[in-house]
Each structure stands twice: as C-alpha cells, then as structure tokens.
Image 1 (cartoon, rainbow, N blue to C red):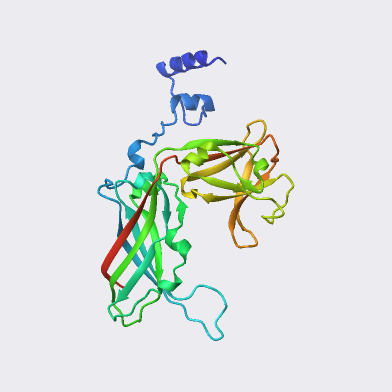
Image 2 (cartoon, rainbow, N blue to C red):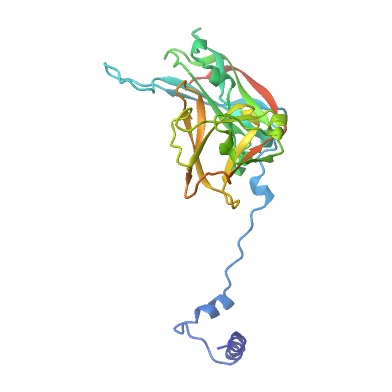
Length: 302
C-alpha cells in the first residue's frame, strides 16, 4: 500500500468516531510515522572543553601519593615489583593542547621528615632524564584539564609522616602543525640513511636497517626496520603504502640490534613492501621544548 494512501486512510480513521483498540497492532512503518525516534544530540565543542579554563604557564601540580609496600619471604623472588612510593602530578597550563611529547616525571631529590633521602641519583638512567614519548592529546585529557605523570621513590620509614621537600621535572615538546614527507621505495636505503632534503631541513635522520644483518628480522618483503638517529622528537608517525597508494596494515614493534641499539620493525599483514612502495613520515616542522620543573613541600604521606 502506498505510504500516502496509508496516511490518508489513517487520517480518515482518526477523524471518525471509530476508536483504535490497543489490541490492534500497528505496522512497524506506521509506528515509526506516529512515534518517530527522538533526535540524538550531536556532541558540541563544550563536550571537549576543559572543566576549568586552561590558564597560566605550564606547570606541575601535586595530585596524589601512593605507598606500595611489598613483603616477600626468603628467598625473595627474582622479579621486579618491590616497595615504592609513587608520586603523581598533573601537567597543566594554557599550552596543554599543544603538547605532542612528554617525558617521565623525573624526581631528582626527595627528603622525608625523618631526614632520609628517598632518591638514588645513580639509579636514574640517561633515557629517563632525556627521552620523551609521543602523546595523543585526546578529548578526555583536554576535558579533565591535565596530563597525568608519575615518578617513584624509595618507600619511606613508617615513622615518616610527610615529604618535607621534593624536586623534579618533566620534559615537554610542543607543536601545532604537521607535514607529510613521502619516501619512494624506502627499501633502496637499506643499510644507510634516507636521503630526503625536507627531512634534513627539519633535522630528522632515519636509517633503514638491513634485515637479517643489522636487524634480526625476516627479509621476506613483509616488513621494514627503521631507526631515527636524529630528530625523533619531530616525528609524529610513520605509514607504509603499496604501489596503488593503499595504506598497508603495518604493525610497529620495538626491537634491538646485537649492540643493544633500538629500532622499530613494521610487520605488514596482507601485503608486501617492494620497489613500488612508499613510506610517509608525518613530522612536526616546528617544535619547541620546555623543561617543566616541580618543587613540592610538606606532602602528607598516606
């Protein structure tokens, strides 16, 4: 039955003295006409806006202390996870939306109210001091208004009641623009650096490792191993494409060479990397670094 005729017939029925009894089930299409589904509200910009305005310079604010104490019978198990005091801080400020990389919360010194130093400077590795990790500034992080960072201390004595003084920092990288740099046939650079003038201008150097020699990975055309030797902080991501410009399903994983140098291996599923393939490196052409420092006093222990 045509929809127009159905609606007219319905109008005639409703206009008469006849009563539609509940026992009469209406067709589904008719139910939709009579009771349309309510429109769903589309997300607005306010849904992703911070609960509080992001004001002031970038800074670290104390969030919480977590005292994790572990007891183990002798002989103690040969595994990590001993007692530690975790210190969580909030990285916040007006430039939070611009953060693209951030390092660990490096605690250089912490003294409790018994006078004990809870940090062993020799235990802080160089990578912890300098290296940053890529950050995805998602709507949830922006809405809460801060990025959570965490550092660890030796557990204080049970007689201690607070941290009298604590000093640390987080390395932060800012950027607002991205750019894609296309590398044709990246396999041609195996065993050497990728030759690309734009990457050189930005300060990025990437080496393609020889599979089976420099990297213990299969050379079957289903993967590529690369290592950024300079300017990794300016790299947003890497994508691989076939000769038809279709993105390959490439999953990155970390690897190490015989001399313990790190690299990233992209394993391709459902495709191959050959002379017609491309590697697209998404970069931040302009980045800015900042060491955001933190000084705390009289932090009450849990």
